[in-house]
Image (tube, rainbow, N blue to C red; front, top):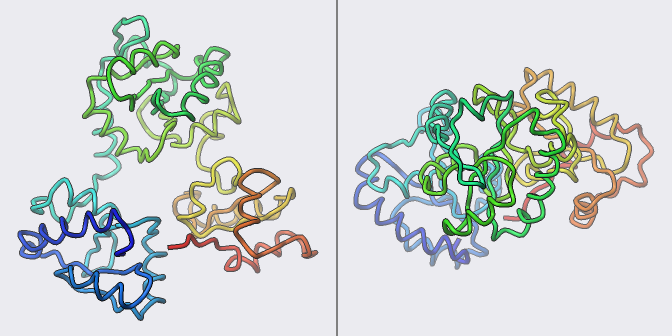
Length: 353
């Protein structure tokens, strides 16, 4: 959209790459506009050397945004034209790192390839706050590994780090070893912050390896606490909320795996990217039962579920949802499960785009 500063920065770059190389290598681009009116669309589209969805087709624009889970712009989704299957929703990053299209169509690594990339990036050399060096064999020998993405300049990190250190010292260390993966701005800040941590760290000099780990584990903000088993399989990327519920890791791994129904106050990250069923109020038994049914139908794979299910007892996120949605459930007297079953569409939350 023309009103979006990052879009105005990225569009001329993409246009140059498209004209110089990408079009000849078989990439066609279709502009799907989030402009506010036809005039803005027309003016902005004049800068684009590719096709566009007509601005008047707002319904199809909304369908595409929903289908591809577009939560912000600019967004570049790469699709196989013969099947309609998504190749990657992170085309912007892909084209920025390969503007001549040598690796088109930028197929993401497989799960096995991603795992090997992360094993290589994590490496076999770690440091502690006393300056001692360690290897996987002498320290990463517990059942679980926690990768703690954090930085001293980050206020939420400054709040969470002492809490995590306390949990680690009081029993979590019996279950897992933690490795600090720093987003600090320099070596001195890294060393100072590591002094507050009773665990290991990836050496600060390994900036490229840090980038691989952040990318492959989908780290979009800090603090992020990614939990792996000893074979480097992901247990959860939401370790921050899980450890708050289970400070000693006593329910690992099952209790830390993605759950079919969650408290929206704990982690609302998918509310804006998925179709969600949220039951406001303290009684969540009905929605949990329906979530279990959907979970079973999806082969017990949360990522394959059509909807994300949440309970919403009183809390900070629950209060925001009440303010943002015109729907009030306080007057309904039907059983909760029935409300969920008949209100799936009404309960869907859509981010303004």
